[in-house]
Image 1 (tube, one colour):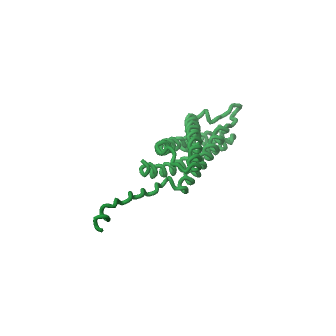
Image 2: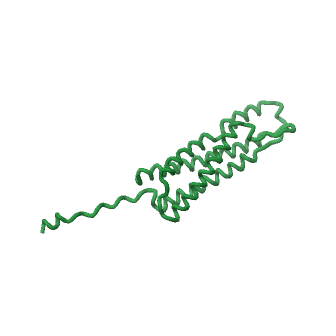
Image 3: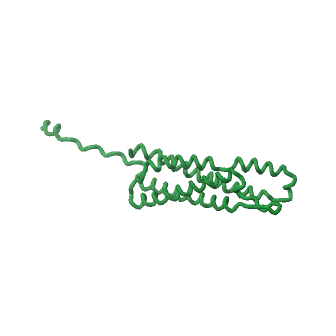
Length: 177
């Protein structure tokens, strides 16, 4: 009887469920992607409409190079978020993991790009210089910089959301590859 028990093969152990394949983590990822997309879209609108009339000429966000870079990071981040949002919806509906390498590398790249795009430093410096200029006292230029602050703040929040997605993809990839 001992011979028959020793000869019977043991069933293979079941692999532990991956972190990302659970329904709750897929939904969390989807929610973070929705939040990121909304924040970037609002940031794009706020920055894109930021103009001001000064002495019969317009001051636009395009006149400041750092705001141009900020706009390009917002546009790239919005396009990536829209793509990932569609893929995340497909993952939630189908119950599959999706393209883990795209999630892993894309989230890291976009989060770093969004972090570099925030225009806080240029806004602080430029606002400080214009506040010191007595010729600009009669012009309420603070509204222009307040809109730039608002757009940069939304971009910063979008970065935080993408950074959280980057952490999720960092946990997911090693467990599935």
